[in-house]
Length: 296
Image 1 (cartoon, rainbow, N blue to C red):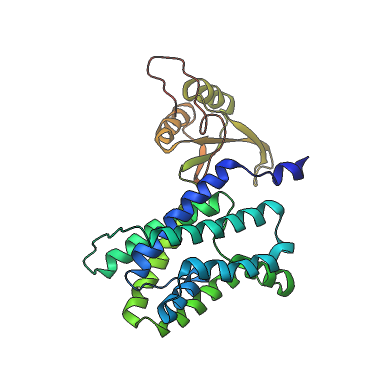
Image 2 (image 1 turned 90 degrees about the horizontal axis):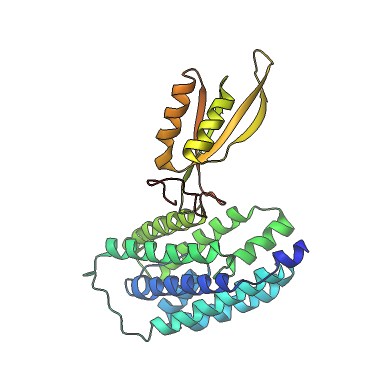
């Protein structure tokens, strides 16, 4: 049963992959190609072919990726291979579309603006694709093969492939354009990481207190947040001490600190970032019990 659930194809995933591919392709055509900015991975290879031989990236994306997908079929699950194939086709389609739609964004030949716009738009698009289980190129497959047979971590392989492609890109762009390409790559990666880590940042709080039950009661009744009790042991006293684990939104952190401080001024609190919080109270509406309570 779990395998069937894992391999199920979701329409929402395909829709978001489509939107992500459209945004990434738009960035490549409107900002990268128009301003001679390179890229890493398979997309970078297609831009090299475009720069040297004027070969349309819409076609080279398919020509390069399809054999890689066929080779990597045994290393990917059913859903992964379908999403990868779909992402490749959508990227090629939108590369073809955006080259024929007359859209001209006037950046006045400012490579800094072009690099920023390409990084933000392309990074957001790629992040969306990755977040919903898709990919847009074959470097992931190459990295999986190296990891399987050589024991080389995927991240390391992907990094070196990007470096290699960017280095080869110097055959059609100069050092100045490469410098702005590196700026683009940095912004691109930051946007991808931001989207993958979750757009809703919550705060996780661990509390050690002698007034644990009082804190639980206040948090559950006043803040309407759940509390988990973790069983710990003091390193010095070796006595059992309950630890409270609570996840709140950033705007609720001060309220929680106030509650704990009023109940136990000697309580020990550890606060850390939670990149994503899923479940009732975060992805669903909180219960409302008063005039000023509202859903988060």
